[in-house]
Image 1 (cartoon, helix red, strand yellow):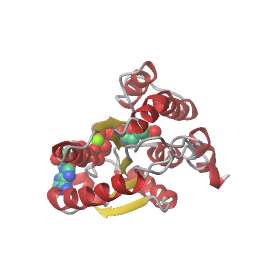
Image 2 (tube, protein in one colour):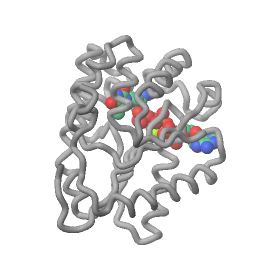
Image 3 (cartoon, protein in one colour):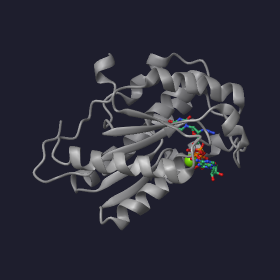
Length: 215
Ligand code: Z5A
Ligand code: MG
């Protein structure tokens, strides 16, 4: 645990299957928090701009094939390489709104058939989010949304598996949202709960113990 001399930012994560509206809500939330005068930053995983991230990008765009376990470890390494910068920003009082995190890492790789505990293990000890919004959308609804099917993994049966594993990964930091609702309704709920979280955790230490208690 890292103890605080001044108030810190909140670590807010949005998770969910493909096309569940994460990126839409992340952007709306960041804009709204900025309007309200909060110090806030949008973060996204995979972070495709790093060297590791560009390998992941080629894989996702089907430019390159990579062994399932190797790509899983690259996704995890991509989070680890961002940890010190994220930690610094949080301790500087900046709230991070993060589009996908380690839960996606475990869910997508386990849906390919890899052992779930093995999938979780490289991410043990990452920063633990203060709140995770899980955008719960049926695969039927997801299929109707624009852009579905453009990248690797975007196929109904696979998404169904991913969703089941997400459900299994749920923990007390999660707030499950019905993602079929209108954008604005979802945004209002996410805004309300985020503001509460920002207030609640401002004086709490940062936790660097993701999934430590499970092992
Ligand atoms: N992946 C992995 O395997 N391991 C890892 O560790 C990590 C990720 C971190 C790329 O992710 C892939 O990487 C992903 C998991 C894997 N699998 N795939 N494929 P990505 O985050 O870069 O994927 P993306 O391209 O941003 O798509 P997305 O995240 O799946 O979509 P989204 O962000 O959830 O949805 P959106 O872009 O906000 O909205 C999608 C469409 O729906 C768009 O036309 C919106 O206007 C519309 N929309 C949004 N909200 C609504 C509502 N409420 N009603 C109606 N329509 C809506
Ligand atoms: Mg997205």
